[in-house]
Length: 379
Image (cartoon, rainbow, N blue to C red; front, top):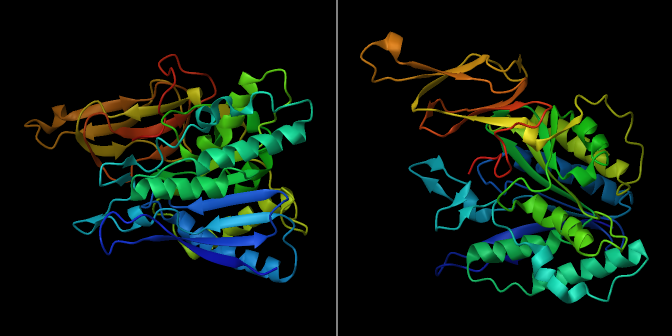
């Protein structure tokens, strides 16, 4: 069966401002389902080019009759953010109308499902999965959008909430490839991490803020806790894929990542065919609480003393913040030191920072005493 493409209109906030989402569907509903989209943070563009290449691979597989499940691809998840420019600078992370970060405050579907599952779950895990998915679909249907952003979120949730696999494709600022997922999906995600050649897999049941991937995965954990005597697997393997940094956008990398995603879909039994040998994994998974996000103690020009991937020890110099207003330049340098042993996962692309802005992330292996939950990702 060839690709089916549909157009879904969003609510318009003003006359003449109608936007739409493009949705590609492969395979037949009713079996295993995968959903993926790119650029929910609309100024994170690597995924847009990756899905451009992946759609071509999926088209060929569909024409050859090799799609064995259902695959839903949204090549751009956020037309609102794609259109946001301020003085020629793309501003796609937050909704300029006051809606906040596009990847925060997604619905808590465990709460929306509420008591609707009481008396409906039994001893059959597969039947429970089907019952819960029906309840989740009903919860999405019950959302009443009040804005264009609300309608965008309802549409995307409706496409993804009953999927077995969800890939939310992002990138960091200047970074190595890494993945976020809940602990219940490791080691299920081990093959994906190896195939993408990820340098880190960061595990958290709640990374803070209500991200899209957790809106899809964590309802299963919460529902299982509510009904501990019922077999309820974590049936939606949702992950955030951080495709390196903002500047890592070219056909060579995008084709490589698209083939890695395609092979991962083969390994998860959605596409027929041999995915080939699995690359050797570059990392094991680590608890998100072992990753430190160093913040700028003051404003200044950022000058790094470390490279991506470089290993550091607690107390090592990571960067300098230089005060351009210092009358004595020798006294205008503030050091930033590592607070844990680990390696540099990400750095800032822009080099003038206000106080409190993230400088870099250091991935370690031991939970940090100064991290007690909440955001790892910056607002």
